[in-house]
Image (cartoon, rainbow, N blue to C red; front, side, top):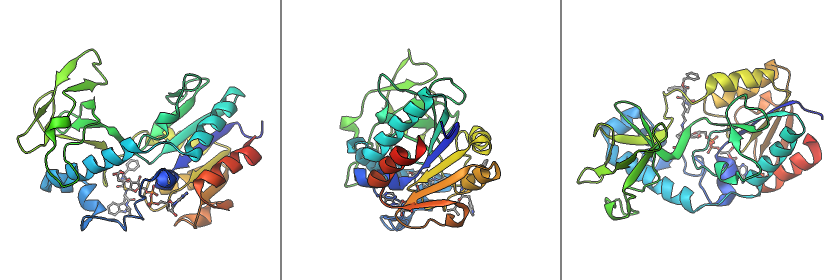
Length: 278
Ligand code: BJW
């Protein structure tokens, strides 16, 4: 086995061929609002309707997308490498849950350090959950609260939230009359379970530890512009890993990589794992 400790990082580009826009495709703008306006706590505090309209649209788009050949190749390759004794970590900046949907009965994602599985970290959160703004309780929630025209869309809302902490509890949905979802625990607003600018990403400490100790780091479909993910390549290099970048164009942090594969994810990723990683 060539590589014993492997870390793969993905960004929006891996889901482009599943039909989901990258942030660069959106030109950093959504409906004349900057991404920072809809992806910050300040933006949410100033205009929760705007933010929920944006994430309702994102939930609908991600819900109808399906994983592509690149998502499947990563899962299958890391599962094989893990079966053969390598320790593997998949970190995604994406919130679209397409990696998670590649799990099957032979291969499930696990936590950091779980033996015989692929460790998985959704660094920037997930579109499939919401948080209570007051207590931080996390609820499974795939609802789209506003339709394409920006109107409150309460008729299709699932009437039940599930708390990951208390899965046995069925909790009835409450929403304000103008469509904003309220937390089942205390009636405060719910917010999307997303890491916004200025907030601490999930699992950074564990990711850092894995990056310093890895011998292969592969970055796929990310522009290398958003910290801390943009620095992961440097952590891996400090630990003397081979660093590989798969992207159609050089990302902002290109100079930190030793190997560049220029191409689209659905072609370049399966090729890379087939020819190089085993
Ligand atoms: C293809 C392809 C194909 C196309 N195949 N590829 C100044 C002020 C305030 C803050 C900062 C500041 N300077 C730095 C900061 C920190 C800030 C930051 O980095 N800001 C920069 C914009 C400057 N970062 C943070 O605030 C982060 N938190 C933080 O730093 O906390 C402190 C801390 C750190 C560590 C430990 C403890 C504490 C939080 C960042 C949260 C980012 N959130 C977002 C939005 C939420 C998610 C959502 O709504 O979806 O996450 S921003 C957005 O960017 C999203 C993405 O996950 C992220 C990365 O984007 P990505 O994936 O790279 O997409 P694109 O579009 O940029 O690139 C796509 C690439 O694909 C391109 O290269 C294409 O070529 C390629 N591509 N088609 C393969 N077919």
